[in-house]
Amino acid sequence: MVGQPKKTYYIAVGSGEISQVKSASSYEYKIEATDDEINQLRSLFTNNYGNEIGTFVRAHIPFREYHHDPDNDAYDGTMQKVFQMIYDLGDEEAREHIRSEGILE
Image (tube, rainbow, N blue to C red):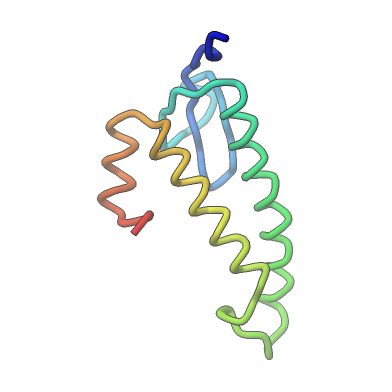
């Protein structure tokens, strides 16, 4: 079986946007990915949307600390997976930016 073809995508992590159109919005990373890989990345962004809601609620509970919050831990863990995928699929500029920021360390 021949592997799926890779297509170019532009990723805006903050908003969770994935686009094949470079000028659609501002983006931080350019990657080459198969349909399956993009579906996996979209799934990670979708999962983190639910985690963001939980962290928002936690922020309004004064007695619950940031470092004792499972929603926040889940968000951070998912973001590590997002950045690992971008690193693995990204162009050299994407990989260099992630390395320079120490995101995966």
